[in-house]
Length: 325
Image (tube, rainbow, N blue to C red; front, top):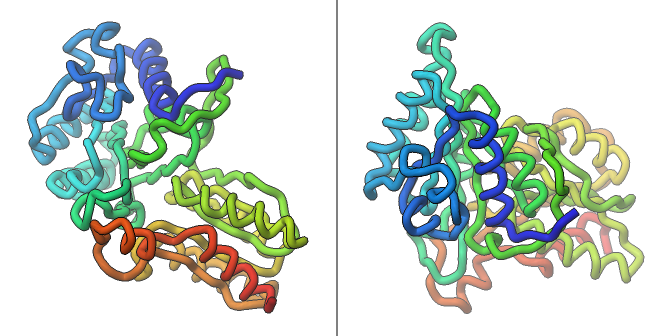
């Protein structure tokens, strides 16, 4: 095992796949000469050259469409957005072409493409740069949506995403690029659509994903000192969703808290709540609680932002509520 940063894990995944398969290439804003806005493509231009590491204009609709056309012709592009907030400029291409082309062509075209970049809040970036889009893209059939929470998962999941024959939305976080963790030395893949139980527990299930899961870990550590053992599940992929792992855990703990950094209306936690009440209602000893951001645009003020974002204190309160403590 070796210890590397999240950004290095992303770079390793892309580089390894580009060495393995000449049809894989990277394009996006500042990915080449600047080594990536968050240095996730550092050194890749020097190794692979300007034909495979391509700087684009600030024109997401245009280069998203170019990449989709390239994928239709046998390539495997990786498209980096400086932030998924900017993907809204290119969302017509993602939803109406990348996601639907296999069906619309009667299976004549696959779209093996990865759209990746940071999602959700990242400090004082205010309302238009702090939005979580996981549930937006997960709502669209034809797309797979991956949200890793640590360097090991990021590398293994990204390699699987690049090899997938369908379009994958791969969502990261500006606040995780510097995170360090152990990563295996040799090649490894993590399959899409498989959640992982990161912490075993018997009293309550906490489901989360992405950077906000750190607050679940903090809460679980505090609660453990009080004799409450939380089982923490990292979804890793939100579409396809690993219902089986969630249901098996709920059947063991009989209680569920879902933590998600997203607005409360119509999100991933809403879908999980529906699935659990439909398939495991008789196992529940308390109503499901989902924890989300406040139902407003993200504020710029750090004081207000702290109130807007869910945190470990919110998780602790929710766990105690479902335990009637």
